[in-house]
Amino acid sequence: MTPEEEGEALREESQIFKREVGPSGRDAPLGEPPPSEKVVNLSNSDAAQRAQLKAKKKALRRHKVIRFVCTTYQDDELKRRMNGLQGYDEAHDEQWWFDHCDGEMKLANWDDKRRAA
Image (cartoon, rainbow, N blue to C red; front, side, top):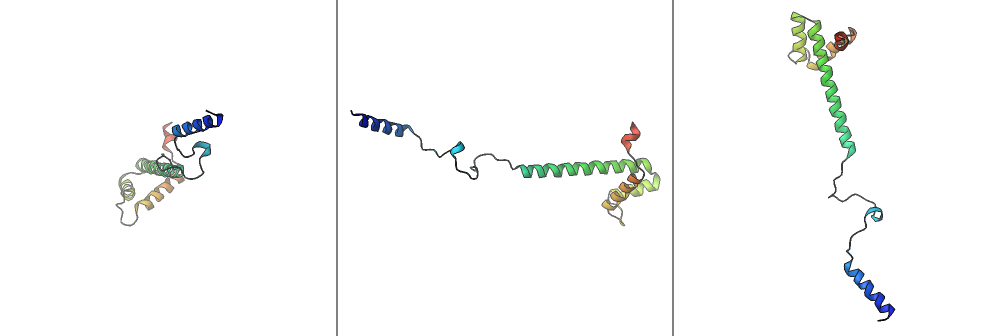
């Protein structure tokens, strides 16, 4: 066998064992990842977390306003404000009562955490 023939035989053997796979890693073409890979869209995740945090803060604020009303008012005034905060007032909606009581709480500079300490 001549060196050229031997080289040809080696090339043919190497072709037999080679798998035809597309380029990967650094050699892969730029573009979208294949759909089979798991990809997380961070912007949607961040937006969901922000919305969840906002809802939690609103709920905590609402509970604080209810605590303010319960400790500050008595009898008819307490009943009227609690009914308003629960949406049972025909003249004003829940949000109006929340804003009204929250404003009263801010004017009174009321904070149950400071009072407990």
